[in-house]
Image (cartoon, rainbow, N blue to C red):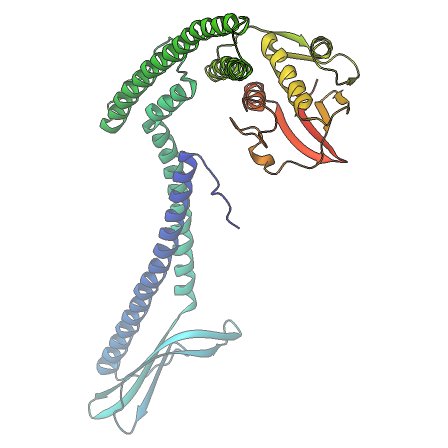
Length: 420
């Protein structure tokens, strides 16, 4: 099972990337700093040990005196010259009354024919304290530099990307049906300037194509009405004549039905086009109870099927009045066309839903395609296949949610309404 990638704002993503890069650099630089400073302190301790050893050797040569400062300096006569040794060791320090870590340098020298072993030691704890202090100071400095650069980088990116966000906001407000030109701020950044230029050209082209398509659709819809009406009138005249035989009468009747269907198809496609182009702007408060009562009364005059209406208090919706009537008409007409003979239609209007129920022998085979254009479950009933597609368009326009389910041998078409 795949999950969609979570979307995050551009500046936040860039800031998160900055945080990770900075964190990695801080860790790597701290590790490098630790070993570098540690090596410097080790070299410094060794240099101090050799300096002390040289001063001790010089004192023996000049003063012929062996002196001890345990555990820092120890001088012992030996029988032979050995190899120089440099190591870390633990020695009990009486002054601290505990074991301490020392860096120890052991050398051998011959002075006036006598061999001596000179051991000098330096306390390592102090160097470790210095190392910790240096690293902590470095981390504190890095932290404040990081915080400063983070907010500086964030503010800088915000100003840098400001033309892009302004363009994005203008695109969100863009509408092909609006006459107001899109306003894009000028930018001194080449990429943003080119983006604005192409967006301006694209939106102008989209508006021009939309106007041409809209004009073409309106012209076709309007121009088709006249020839269809003329053909219908001529066929009516021929049918009413006395010289037709039965075959000719049936053929002309079929043509007449096809013309009527074509007129309905043209009308509904024009309605869908107007809904998609947001041409229904006569928004008012519609009493859905009263609209349903009126539509049920009108349909009862055309159909013998009983329509039962169950409702509670008045449901008021803010929408175009004509579209509210079309929504109710299409739901009721669909139920009447596909209901079983002599089975009543039940309309239930609740606070947050409108449900239309009609009895059926079986559930729909492809309910996911129910609200698509020209989809018909079967050809038994003559229909344009656009009624429920128009319902879906109206629901999308006003934020309603249409759904279908089959239960207890009934088709349930539900429109989820906004909370009152």
